[in-house]
Amino acid sequence: MIHGLYAITDPQLTPDERLLPAARAALRGGARLLQYRDKTATPRQRENRAAQLRDLCHEFGALFIVNDDPALAARVHADGVHIGQSDGGLAAARDRLGEQRIIGVTCHGDARLVVQTEQAGADYLAMGRFFPSHTKPGAPAAQLEALRQACRQCHRPVVAIGGVNPDNAPQLIQAGAASVAVIHALFGHPDPADIEVAARRFSTLF
Ligand SMILES: Cc1ncc(COP(=O)(O)OP(=O)(O)O)c(N)n1
Ligand SMILES: Cc1ncsc1CCOP(=O)(O)O
Ligand SMILES: [Mg+2]
Image (tube, rainbow, N blue to C red; front, side, top):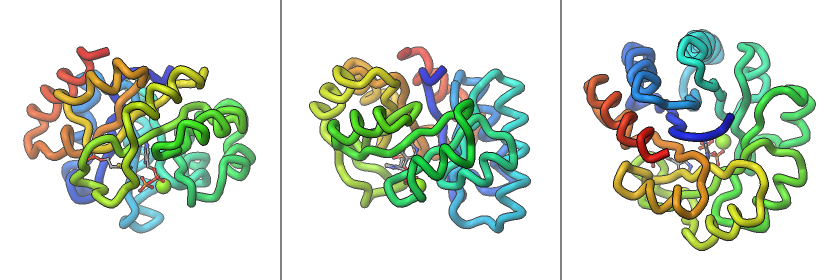
């Protein structure tokens, strides 16, 4: 089920030696989904890390999602994949992963695209960025009103992303977001104990 805190790893904030303790802390704090997002590691490193994160997520009963790469998601038996508008398309990802696995799709700030993408068979729709983002400052901006509209019209869960922290997340949840996806406000904390505290703050909002 796609609901609650959605933690996303980052190669700068969660490099190899920090990845598993940081991810564990987010899961201990109640993250219900975790995405492996790493555009810099080698294919072998990506596969090893993804397999370790999958096992960790399943220890906590959380869903494990791979960013960008349906083939890697299939190889490591992830629960699903997240794709953007330039990541090869929903149809190709569905062919690769079958009907049982989750496919989430970025729809930026476009409520009409959310509805179209739901009709095309996505399992969740992601909108953002809603706030200034440390991690991806150039991501297209999205408005809260578009989120409200999308959540009224769409039957699948809508995930909100971009500069989300425990203080601004309530606005997104009130607008109808089923989940908030977070990098910096979780993994920007160097100490895993602080990651866990931050994750718990998010989790109690749901
Ligand atoms: C949950 C979630 N939402 C949005 C994104 C962004 O995906 P994309 O637009 O493909 O950008 P990159 O993350 O690949 O830079 C995401 N990864 N996860
Ligand atoms: C991947 C992505 N897509 C839109 S904003 C963003 C980054 C989210 O990271 P942060 O929570 O640090 O803003
Ligand atoms: Mg992508």
